[in-house]
Amino acid sequence: MLSNSAFLFPLFAVFLPFAIVALGLWRVFLKADQPGWAAIIPFYNFYVLCKVAKKPVWFLLLLFVPIANFYAIFSIWNGVSKNFGKGLGFTLGLIFLPYIFLLVLGFDESSYGDQSPPTTGLQFLQIVLVAGVVAFVFIGAVGILGVIAIPNFQKFKGKAQQSEAKVALAQLYTAQKAFHVEYGFYHTDLEALKMTQSNLQSYRIGFVNPSVLDSEILATLGELQLDPAKMQVIPAGRTPASHVDLGNYCSDCTATKDTFKAVAVGFINGKADVWTINESKQLKNIQWEEK
Image (cartoon, rainbow, N blue to C red; front, side):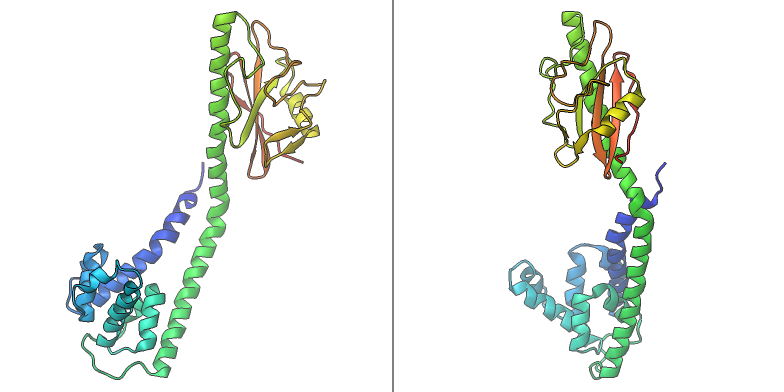
């Protein structure tokens, strides 16, 4: 069973910055005597932000006008910065690093309408240091979670890709049964079975001699040159020992009146993956790692 971290990582990476911005904006609105919950309401939060910046409401329309929107964004954040006694450096921080500078503005000792001098060089340096620490902690947390989650995510992705083999072999089984009902025997020609390889991305399907063991199939595949990028076998992929063929037709793969065995070979996370199915609908993942 996969760890929850495989699902938590992308959610964490997407929603944590949003949550930080929302928290900082919530605090800024409260300090400006505006409703804090407005921070999480799309569009309305920009309306309240204009009020905090003491900008006319029609500035919201400028946000949808190319080029003019740059002026609107700068003017709104600069207005917010000035109304809390901050300077140009802090304005730039709000624009380019909002998830850091909004937290600083929301939790520092500045007050709305503060007409104190703009941020001094020393104060700005302190802000930058705090921002650096916050950024370092954030990046470190994402990195640690990534180290934990990425391997599990790869496993989850591989399991999802394996569904292609299961579906393809199930369809091939159904096609064989329909052919058997009509003609009284099984076939090893995909075209005769009205099957195609063209819709497969990660796997190739074909046939093997029903009498061979799984170990013989793996041994044969281990001796073949497989091209993962094109999902082709070089050369044709049929050997006298096991009669494995991933082409459209296998003349040497004996399908009788009562038996057949089909195979799907794919590459998952850089390793080969092998599935088989027979006339009894026994679907097996016999696996094989490229050596």
